[in-house]
Structures are given as C-alpha cells and as structure tokens.
Image (cartoon, rainbow, N blue to C red; front, side, top):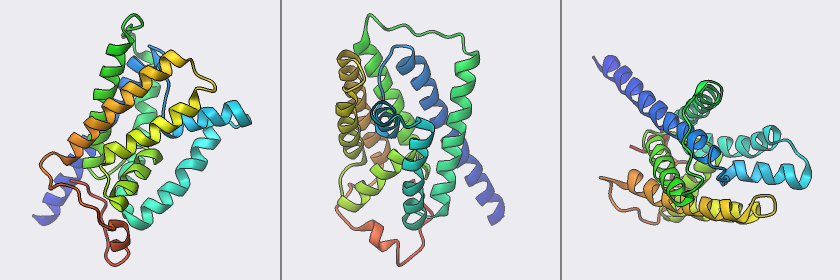
Length: 223
C-alpha cells in the first residue's frame, strides 16, 4: 500500500510539473515569441553571448545550466534535479511541437501591455507550479530558488532582480520598446511566482537552508 501511494504521488507530481511546463512553452511561443518580447534569465544571457562573443546559445546555455544543476544536486537532492530534467526535456518537446504544428496566432502587437501582462501571469504560474512540485524550469530558476533559501528573500523577488539585470544588458541587441515590456512581464511573473510558491505556506524567514542540507538529505520537494 505504501509503494502504491508513493507511485501515485510521484505520478501526480510529474503530471503537475508537465502541466506547468506546458503552460511555459505555450506562453513563450504564442505570446512572447509571436509578439517579439525579449527574454531574461539564462536565455537572455545566451543571446548576449551570441551577440558579443559569437558563442552559440546551444553551447552557452549548457555551460550556464550544468554548474547550477551540479550545485542543485548537492544542496537540493537528486529528486529535485530529476524533476528539473523532466521539465527541461518536456519544455523542449512542447515548444518544438507548437513551433512546428500550432496554427494558433495571438497577435497583440497593438497592445504589448496586455501581452506583457499575460506573459507575466502565465509564466509566473507555470514556473511557480513547477517549483512547488519539487523541480525547476531551468538553471536560472534553480539559482533563484537557491539564493531565496540562502538569503531568505522571496523567490519571486530574486527572479525579478536576476531577469531585470539580464534584460538591461539585453538592450545591447534588443529593441528598447520590447525590452521594457518584457521587464513588465518579468515583474508580474515574479509576483505570481511568489504568490504561487508561498500560498498556504508559512512566511519565509532568513535561514541558511543550503548549509543545513549538508547535514541531512533533502528530496528537493517544495510542496
């Protein structure tokens, strides 16, 4: 019975992670990409690396993700990293399928404020769901979570700070208008992530959780 319940819990958790990942892929393709909003996080840094150094994003993203995943393995446990791999792999599949087969066009070029609002709400919800389910959607989200736990700062606040810095650097290669609306989307997403991950949980206090994981195992579950 215990094994059965464990299997059901794992299946439920993976289903929730896949739903959050689908929401992210849907939003990034149908709202961000189709309305030319730029990107923050490691994707934005990879694009900057391509612009400044000529390094392919496929290489630079890997170089950014791998060290963070190794740190997460040490401090958050293998379950967290495995859940993150599921999310990252599913995102690649979902986004690729939408890019190739989706005929849905959400044209908000005349109302980028609405596009930014929708992007922020949906990506924040998707990322928050994944974090609550014991995973992350990428290396930048892992870094935000680790900094949040280490410094006692709300994870959404860390998400906003990191992405705004990257987007400021992105002004070297992205139009100002789209970048500013992307900043708006990032801020909204940060608040939604904070709301989603903290709903029904005690208020976050400043505590060295990362150090405590060295003394006892952690399964990486945020829920």
